[in-house]
Image (tube, rainbow over all chains, first blue to last red; front, side, top):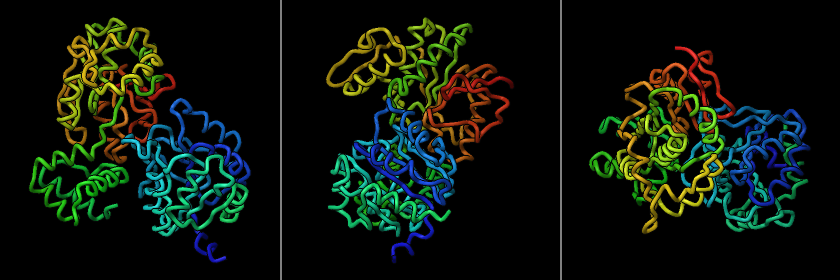
Length: 195
Length: 270
């Protein structure tokens, strides 16, 4: 498969989503075997009051260890990182993560576009961006940035998404490399794992 | 996005022409902010933008206002304020006089939050709140105590979640879409310009709050600033940071003890 050549050296898989994405994440993450040869970064919209519950839930269900995101934490392969609520999550050249409390983008903080664009700048062709279910347009601009920088863009098949607007919007405005349902996304992640 | 080399040129020019040093700011956020300003202003080439910054001090000031992040809110992270109220203020209350420094206070919402809590705990009369920022225009807003009314509902919710039991609307007068906070809250506030990048310690404090400011700095500058706070903090004083910030990369852990579950550290020795 030609695409496989392009993604042999994946360093980061970044996953964005909004309404309905938790269900999709829970169909994928618990079935990814430990260890993984890349880092998984999750950027989802949620209410501030949900603060720790998403981290706890994913840590509980996943075989891969969840590392708490604090400002300037090192981004390392083999771990899951989850963007904290009420901050934008950004990527630095020295492979640390930075946080930012600036204005909401697409009514969202964290914004998927902000994190996707920032990750694309640093990880370029070593990055895979996956956009899941959601009901706003955040993520489309970011997916395009990932592709432009040489990375791979994956969109959840809107038919399999609880809220198809977000993946539909990305399909309408970009040409994703892959449109996959959740089982296929899981297979995809397993395939790129070189551990 | 602008190119890395363009950002570095801007950083150098700003330092050379105005003496302000962005060199130790976190690049990811700074680059995004500068790119945004550059795009918004409709410059064709980056060198046009650079020459405007170099030759027009008024424009330079506006640009600084735009690229520094001034988003803040009252009682942000209510559980943090609840811990301050229940655990920290009673300890500070045993002192004859309480000195507090809000470093990087932006438009002042957190300073007014603190004043409200101090008042309710009967401590405001013996407190002094120093509030500093690099940005002169946000300090003007902070001094005025006037905030957009559309935010007040969220603030009132935060206030209650932070243990507030009064009627929040007693603290301000609403008019023309703004809320003006009572002057008896600001009587104990002192506002002044202070640059964490280059200025030194100016007093000794019992509590220093610097929330969501260090995230814009790289590791070296974070170290400098945490040590500046250390120099400015009395033994048994408290340092409070944002919920996702830490001092662990910046200072010896034997000098500080994390307090409760929040990002509050107590200085346990000199």
